[in-house]
Image (cartoon, rainbow, N blue to C red; front, side):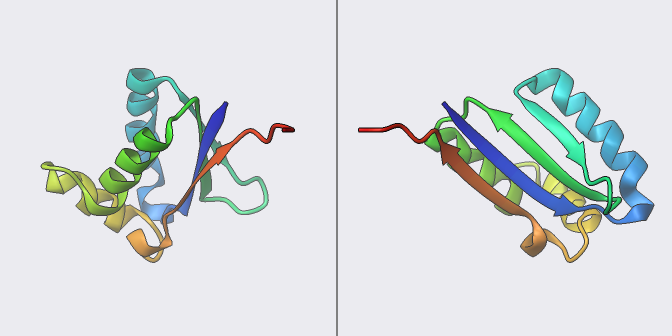
Length: 98
């Protein structure tokens, strides 16, 4: 089992646009939860389930460096407090005893 955690803070002015975008993406993808900090409004964490390391690298590349659709990278850069350098991603696998 593996999971990916993605963490970032969304600027208040873009919160509504961001939530609409993420709801659409969640409907298409279905493998992740989107959580918002209860004591830090605007701080979001995505928890992706069953993501291979290769898929993680692809997702990270897409988020941080964009795809052919440069507009998506520009949107994330604008939405996130501090820009893309403040978007953090980690891949974890289950610890098993050997």
